[in-house]
Image (tube, rainbow, N blue to C red):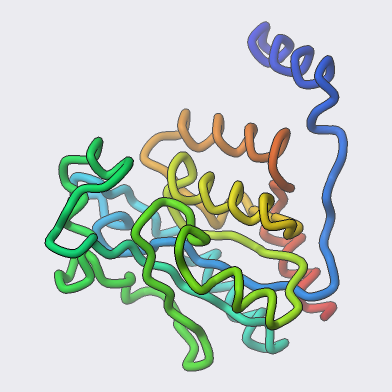
Length: 211
């Protein structure tokens, strides 16, 4: 263990974080965040190679579809008139995620079942001014399993939104991705110690198959 790892462990232990798991509940839903082409292909300025993220997300959604667990896909859409509001003032190329462009469409490698729901959002969190929370509440959902990208942005924001609404928040680590390993690791660690449970995809699959 490096000195930095030891320091991190000392800090989290001292403030009483990371030891407790929220665990899985009884009524889950899957939220697939922003796996749009402009984010999943490295040739785009905002993109990275998220092939493995898509593959593992497809494994999770397939298991969900087999057990009638609802699946929601989100995508970023622009504000009217292309206005830059909030954090999007910081991101120069955010317009490539406009769904009217090929780069803004959901990646065609995703296995999107006809029973799935697509939700458009304008900010980082899938819960911000969308119908997601009211829909989950109506379905009696107590557990959300969050996949997609980017871990340091919309995944982190969505996990915080889910936790704030009282959901058990689960992130399968191989089903989320970012533009660098450093961003990925740092944000998964922070989600684990502050917000929800970062688990293996295999753990999620076993849970879904037991429903």
